Image 1: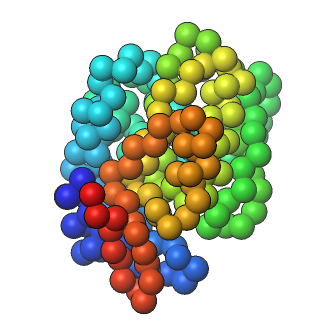
Image 2: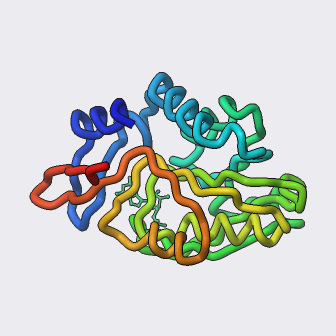
Length: 191
Ligand code: 5GP
């Protein structure tokens, strides 16, 4: 998605250990026009695939997932990272190792929002080693739901996430694929 790649080039900042900071438009401040176009781009790809729910993880997956859900006309569920007092029963849970925080979190979705009739599009802001996506897939599978595909806003193609997911038979669709962040420079995978 050219518009997204241009924005990454303009506003993305490379941090140490191969982390890209995009907090001016995606992970902290959100550009709603860009998010709306991102949502439409996911919808263009998946509108004929009978998606019934979009599933993401808090917090940075919520903005692109919400716009994808709007464009597809389906509800959006975000997995929560802690069990709060109001979410203490009937939970689907999975453990996820966080690439950026280097800690393991329990993620949870209420059983009430997913079932075996659902055909899910999983969406996340970044794909690195695939652990967040894998945790979300696990929650869907616990509910008996089918995972149709994984939609990613920014894939770091030099990490192992895509291979991990594809080896398990999942389709991965990314709007921007980063080849390298070496020398503080963002380069994209040539299509
Ligand atoms: P994975 O689970 O695929 O290893 O990592 C994906 C998760 O880690 C995403 O949900 C995202 O929040 C975070 N993440 C991974 N790499 C980056 C990055 O380069 N920049 C930012 N902002 N978040 C990242």
